[in-house]
Image (cartoon, rainbow, N blue to C red; front, side):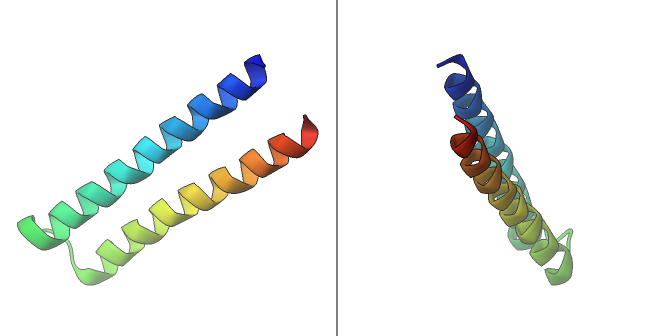
Length: 65
């Protein structure tokens, strides 16, 4: 049970990080114009990779239980 709670907290933490990355990238690209399209797409990819890694980690942890 404790392991499940730890995994859930990790998921929530990673989702918050990914949302913040997306929000910051969008703000910088659309409003502040401080980054170019390539940098914006790189940040989107980084966020997606964070979520993909999390999905793999969770599915692996689920198999171990």
